[in-house]
Length: 428
Image (cartoon, rainbow, N blue to C red; front, side, top):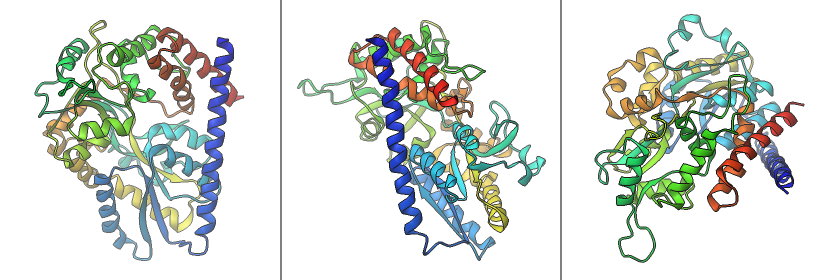
């Protein structure tokens, strides 16, 4: 029976991926054919996943850059990260798509393998490339010895964010989190429904759970890009998160990204685990936020290790001639120190240029400094396709822990088997 269930998990994931790909391909075809008549060959489009406050900065930067090339039009288009990635793959393979794609470094491997982005080495001088950070993490992303992404920020990592109006000092350990959490989780009118939670976050999604795997001394992938999921660390991390929801009851039983974000923004949660992309939104909403490391695991004495993903720009493989030259000029402008610091000023992101990183706007900013403290215990994600299959393999069994269908130990075993199978089937 267990073997059948695992087969069904794998088959369902593959079916869902194919169905999603079909509809995305259909959408791209519609977009391409509907826009063919009015296609502008002198138009540079940037696809991105910036939040509204950062999108305004991007629009302003594009407007300021435009006079350098008066015969060209510069514009941007927002997609959520997964949609941006999928649509870019499909459109670029079809010979179209945006000139520049902005996303996380883990997109690079799949995009290189599918031939939809081109190497950047020959377009930028070594002096320029040397101006980007290499410590504590390499900002720019190389794959098979070639440069494919130039970063505009490092990090993109999760932190503990807290509302200072509800909590003055964040917990340092998980035991403190549980103790404080029971006081901050409140049913004000005693109707059996929680009016305020201590902590919310999108914990059902594996990316938001992996910090705790690191806190127990494990990780999800090794240096040979093999999955490392059937471990005590993975099982203990899943068990801990399940206990926070079902035993200690300091986090909601069901909590996706939008729900957790809304609860925190509405002052109905004292803490949230979220990334740098969200902080500007909270500040804009008038919340006096603080940042801290995700609480330490008492059992191991280790800090949780969020995935660290440099964010940056890649060039569409279809670009050539003058359009390629203009796109490279725009890429250089978008990753300049001045532009990076403008984003830092509104959202607290960590710039990728050495001189911008040393700027007082970064080093003297309490939020950015706290973010850096979390970054230092994070783990850089490799830019390989295997990581995508590992995320997919984790999801079904990990989520089944929260409704009691399987134990954390069985979930870890199932994740490993499914990850190995997905990698094997996709690499054959």
